[in-house]
Image (cartoon, rainbow, N blue to C red; front, side, top):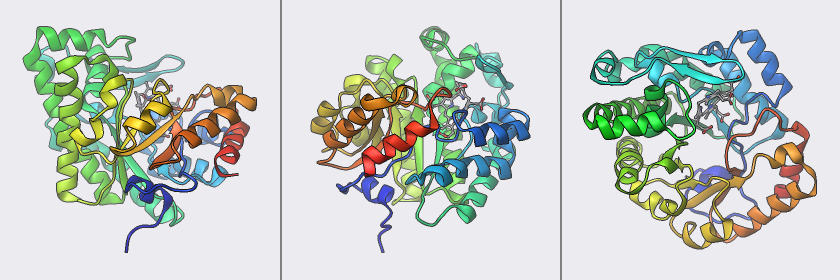
Length: 343
Ligand code: CP3
């Protein structure tokens, strides 16, 4: 029998009266209960690697808001760490990693199949969640896409223009290509292991896809996604896959078909009327409320939420934000958003 949960129906291409809703970074610092559990864990990475606590923060927004989907609590940068990179987080600044600047650094990384040793606590989090989540709430597993993860591994941090990654791509294409291939293989293995542990949907985050232009976009955003999705679907033909080629602009057109994804997540820059006309006939779409509206609140939050629901009401849609919710968001504004969607 077909899975009749709202998220699964939308991802299969059904047009629904009320769209399923969840939020990127729904477990996060805007919630006092998250901050309390994070303090208990000590730091962000300890939280990610302590299955009971990671499961607890995953469940917190489900309990508080009754979202239609949960997303595993982890981070896209755990894969580089599992490949042997050093990883740490600087409070108020963000992630730091040891860098991959040439063939020697690449050679020091572990093979893709070695990741499970480090990542096994993440699979345990998934198993706990499958026991503890309400049956009506699907669990989304995720990973970063190879290009986005590579930008952090090459620069050793987040960068506004992904300059170091572009330079390695252009000056040492061999090492860069090897890194993309290693990440493609590791990401496939990581997502397959999440599914084996109980993830029911997977999402691939390519947060920096928009900085790849022309043929580079095809080679390093589209092709790796296509390879990963083909491997996932070969093992699990009915597994729904969401992709997020953030800031891809016109390259959103055709992305779902070319990669085999069931849904594309839209960033805040994508015009909903354009996406409804051009993208929704190709696949389900997810998005794309500006997270800043959950800081601001007020009538604009209500109006924009209703505008997005209305624009996508003629096809398959998963309501979400255009990027992660920020620590400054007011938890009460999430209730207002939900009322505007469901009320
Ligand atoms: O959506 C969810 O609730 C699931 C968990 C999740 C996190 N990160 C938790 C997190 C997911 C899916 C991610 C993805 C992620 N991580 C991306 C892709 C999506 C995007 O935002 O573009 C990227 C680029 C990262 C890397 C990363 N992790 C950065 C740049 C930062 C620092 C920025 C920040 O918000 O502080 C993180 C930390 C991080 N990942 C936090 C959370 C809840 C905040 C950590 C904390 O508690 O201090």
